[in-house]
Length: 114
Image (tube, rainbow, N blue to C red; front, side, top):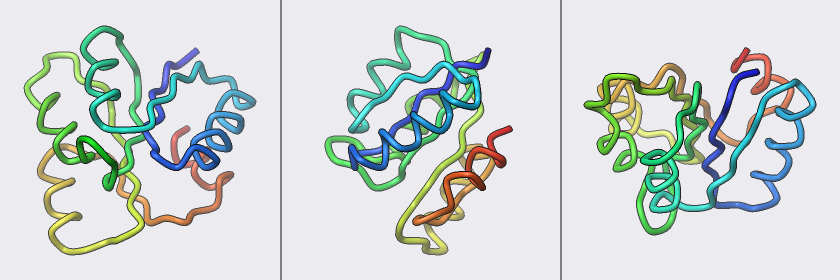
């Protein structure tokens, strides 16, 4: 079973993603802001991080910068509700596997993660 950290500040969206991924067989942990996500990543290992870019306390790009030098870094799929050239370029430069524009179809998201 793959471990996924879901980092999304909108609790209803976070809950829906967790429900869909859990039903697909993933073990999920949730964080609702970037600071909490960074703290969780310091103590637990994940196979994948589903990371919202725009969040309170610490944005997704800052979270990515804090894990960029790790030897065993999890794969990262980022989501954003506001796509700009800067966000796309910065995310790619920090090793994001996929950048998905929100809102997105939850089944398509699960398919993309698999």
